[in-house]
Length: 83
Image (cartoon, rainbow, N blue to C red):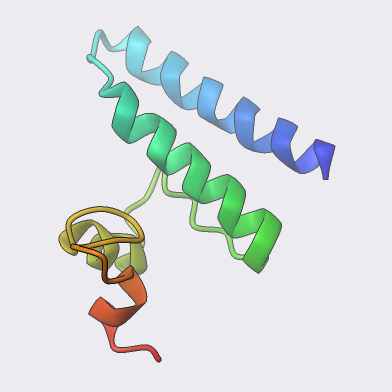
């Protein structure tokens, strides 16, 4: 499991380095939310969101709910109609 955390972190560092080489500012709250989503997705659900480099449709739906995992006390799952 430690290897998985390391791989996700290295992927995140690589992403930050690419953005800094282009002089792009990085919204750190968004970055860490996506990194956490990648780690949790892989560790708990064995699902590769790869949210640091791609916008998975599931991620877009969750962000549209007002944030990953919650919207006014309703979980993101309720937004996509999964029960």
